[in-house]
Length: 117
Image (cartoon, rainbow, N blue to C red; front, side, top):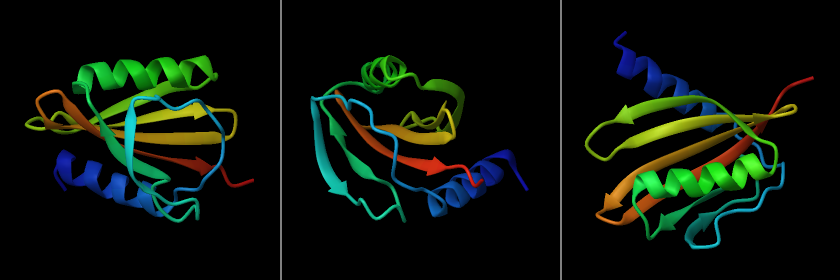
């Protein structure tokens, strides 16, 4: 299987395991287009009126302030600068997807997985 195929497979597996939990202060400048507190899918999806680079900085600041640490950045597509970030705090893993929607507009999605005991 090609590396891109493996990355997509890992992403799909992760999406299937997303659970809610772990509070943190989200970037205020976001527009929420979808929210699901069920824990069965992404917790939230939306847009930010900034570039992907600026969006990444905003999320990084918000997450680091709450004690999260970035463990991995997985590039998924170069044209839209789509990537998946894996953040950890204690027993929780936060997945954050970021991508370019248009010049100066970024899409995002996030969810938290709890580790099995």
